[in-house]
Amino acid sequence: MSDPKKLFVKTYGCQMNVYDSERMAGALATRGYETTEDMAEADMILLNTCHIREKAAEKVYSELGRLKPLKAAKPDLRIGVAGCVAQAEGAEIMRRQPLVDLVVGPQAYHRLPEMDDAVQQGERALDTDFPQEDKFDHLPAARGPKASRAPTAFLTVQEGCDKFCAFCVVPYTRGAEVSRPVARLLAEAEDLVDRGVAEITLLGQNVNAFHGAGPGGDWSLSRLIRKLAEIDGLKRIRFTTSHPNNMDDDLIAAHGEIEKLMPYLHLPVQSGSDTVLKAMNRRHTADEYLRLLDRIRAARPDIALSGDFIVGFPGETEADFEATLDLVDRVRYAQAYSFKYSARPGTPAAEREEVDENVKSERLARLQEKLTAHQQDFQHSMVGRTLPVLLEKPGREDGQLVGRSPYLQAVHLLADASQIGEIVDVRIVATQRNSLSAETI
Ligand code: 5AD
Ligand code: SF4
Image 1 (cartoon, rainbow, N blue to C red):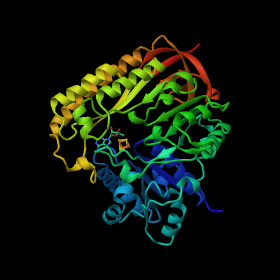
Image 2: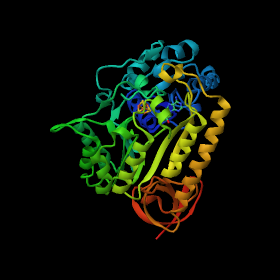
Image 3: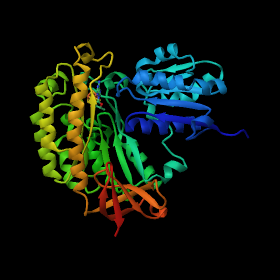
């Protein structure tokens, strides 16, 4: 038997992509590929790209440029581009970079094995179609020894988005909102738990718009969560990413009622200015968002909130920006992601006049200073507390494990590797910039 072929996947961007990378590896395992962490020994290199960051496409081209010597040394090396950049500019990538053998969009990962066959025959393969069939029907679930050991897993419950925020490519690259059927999700969740998974994060670009077909009609996300909470071995449930307008009453109530639903919510607002929110087509005001958070905090007072922000959206004035700072001061996020606006070709906002680059940079710095201060306050408020931590994997130092608090903070502590997968009560003794240190009790 020949040695297994090696697959190296470089993943950019969101958790959806991390999950998709696992599934692509699963699909290619049917053609004898094993994953490797070492790009140099790879027989196939896949770049699983994200369109959200600035100059995403340019970064993909420069990454591809860096692969040239590898391909020169190993002519059989296959190079593929997947993810949202592949979806958006597939043909252009093929044209500009002759070393690319295959380009595959997020809706076509189940066709990777056949695409690999085509490359084997000396062809170049491009698939960025939106098929009618359910891609989830074809992909083997993420499995294998690695998956069965990890105590946390992602489960995609919906894909795509119908919201059409003026800055965002998702409705174009990932397509219309599609929810997966409830029976499939429950079966996959049970399977994950059977293989040792203690925490499941439900994923979707617009996860709380979930409306999967189930017994008695379409199920909401909260109904799905309530059902998942009945699975014995499942200890923790999370979900991401949500849109404020889809936080319905029952989902809010669930945060107070379901112990397994972790007290952490990523709920992007993007801006604190009503004018900008309107221009972004977010379809709610800053005040409506704040009142929504009041209701969520009433249901679950200790909930840790996280958000996304865009500064320098076309037309954003200094006063608009200050409204964002003001909103941030009111909310005091535990965690946040902030970006300078950058035009995405094909989106409505890309046609509008841009804010000066220096102004954007200066606003981003001011916003991040505030967000970081609040995040540090949140971290410091944990010192001296006892928290249940799900031990996930070995830490950087010998004898150390890393786990997660209910609030999604990374927690380091000395513990034996045999405890991976357990939830232990620990005392938080110190904070670093992005993590907590703890002692077992
Ligand atoms: N420019 C800057 N940030 C963007 N995001 C999405 N599109 C853009 C864009 N064109 C940010 C939003 C979103 C997050 C995933 O990425 O804040 O919530
Ligand atoms: Fe993009 Fe999210 Fe808006 Fe959908 S809701 S268009 S994914 S930013």
